[in-house]
Length: 313
Image 1 (cartoon, one colour):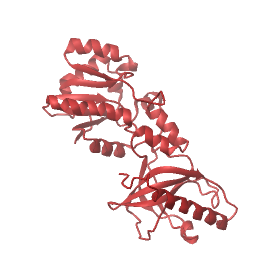
Image 2 (cartoon, rainbow, N blue to C red):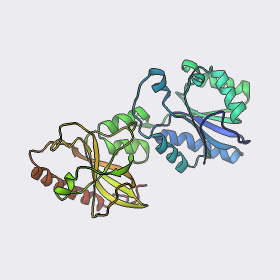
Image 3 (tube, rainbow, N blue to C red):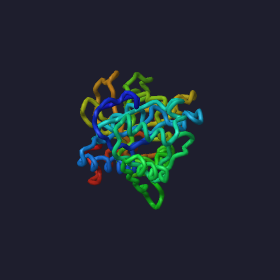
Image 4 (tube, rainbow, N blue to C red):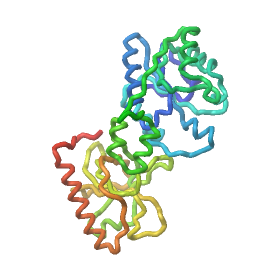
């Protein structure tokens, strides 16, 4: 996959089939758009996805909503998807004020667009003035082929990033994963914690996620841990350690089953598979340890269940 950081940077002399969006989560609906691009590559064009460094909504509304996937994670997911070209451009003032027709002309003149693949609710150009109806007119006028993809639905409700975001925030990991068509995950570097888990015979690895990352509801989750090219089974606590702390500092701590190696400083991927319970404040360390023994057994039962698929990558 070739990566460019702006529309202006693109310099390949190839015809393209393009799709455009925020692609937060790269969910099943997004994959359907990409699938249409792949089928068009048989026509001799290259698949090209355009996304933005920050959400246009964040820029326009001066907000800071968290992301299901960070910039680095989204780039990796697109690479794994098989897209030939990925443009990740800033949503700056110049792009924001571009009129719809002028934006399409840029796609044709600068990116050699022959096909454009969008969803039924796609909007573009200054203040979202452009829509699918305008694109149909422009496709006839300017000579590119427009393909409009219907929204995928789950339980008669559109699959969308906002819907997935709500499920994650409530801790509904199984549902969020189902909507995405893949597993939610958090990347991070293993850092030193307070060694509390080790003192009660439940050592953990601790990671600090990106500040822009959308984090699940506080609770205990069954997770898979991808480390040094290997997969391990784990139990992850997302929360503020209320039994020991009062400062409300968020931590993500994972107890890896049957694992004792020192992995400080290593990059790890925590893949969330199922919520076990909400975070609880216990009266003592002993009460917490008793619950952790129960949690661990539930994790072991999950990973030995015939319905669990061993490879979660």
